[in-house]
Length: 382
Figure (cartoon, rainbow, N blue to C red):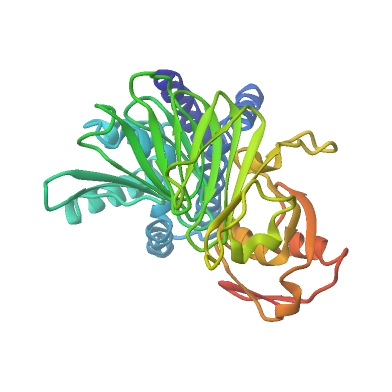
């Protein structure tokens, strides 16, 4: 699977570079479009590099080379999102990536990019990306690998055991690289991720989050558990998972395919759509409650809302504007402020793919009106 992914990415970089240099044939352009459709995680890299290339084209003249270089420096964190996550330990990473990127690029621009890469290597020795994989030495000399996505970015990574993880915006995934895949396979998640876990009956795969722990052997499922949200979810696509609530270690909830568990503190019980499976003891207002429901694909768009983000779709299914504000903040990378508290509990539906933030908000306000103002790096809804 990894070799197949690498091959697809080599073709992607070759075709994209030919497109940017206007040397691509009609057949190659069709092949590039097909590759992007089957690999949604490549869209962001393609869009970013196209934007940078267009910026260079619009600023002709030798004096503007410095402007272009500053633009490259500004966006260097958005390069090669999946490549670094999967091949960070490959000694040939820089040279292999450079050769794929350079193919089809004019000599002048090739020299500029080469100088840029050389400058990064000589001055820092480390290249930072929007998805960063870092080994952090703890006092006991154990190395923690951390994979981070910023707001406005999504990525795919392959773990040492071959398990694949799609990480949504504003998320981070940590694991102990010195013990992972030895006796256990354990990771810690803050945010949202879709897991396709390599089956291994002797080494369970465990995901730790703030509200729950999820144990699997081999399966595909989605977990949404941001530390700043009142609820957390686990949605099972295939296989089986065992969920343990943080404050009830003796109670195991087993999900079957096409089932979803939603967990909330009692403070957030009003957000649950059906009666909970258990009641909270008296005087424990923060005790976690949960419900188990069937996953329901959207009948119009034929998509499961809980995993729509993995297909680069932003979907709202009876979501409150308060939750939508958080989702849009991560999706578009702009701070969203609800200035009118009375709007928080308004519920909305929507299915978006290539729309801008302004287009999404304009559509939502048609059903239940509100006003909004978009600034450079923030949005105010009132």
